[in-house]
Length: 108
Image (spheres, rainbow, N blue to C red):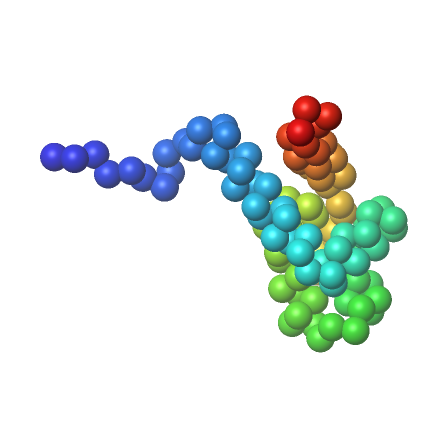
């Protein structure tokens, strides 16, 4: 009987890092998500309503953008009663971009 690979099995670190980079770069590919990320970063923390007010997107579109940023790890979210409060994870972006830039060092 052949062993079937389970999605729950731990992936090698290199594969996890590539998948994380793909998620982050995909999240950053949309200009509205970049603006949301910068806005949250500059304000420290924002609730979803404050974020939605700052952009011309509909609420469902803003909600999808926020979900994409959370799923990529670029935004962290916490419940505060009925509202969701978002903050940027600066360390993730700095670590990822630093590592990515390192691939293109002076030896290239």
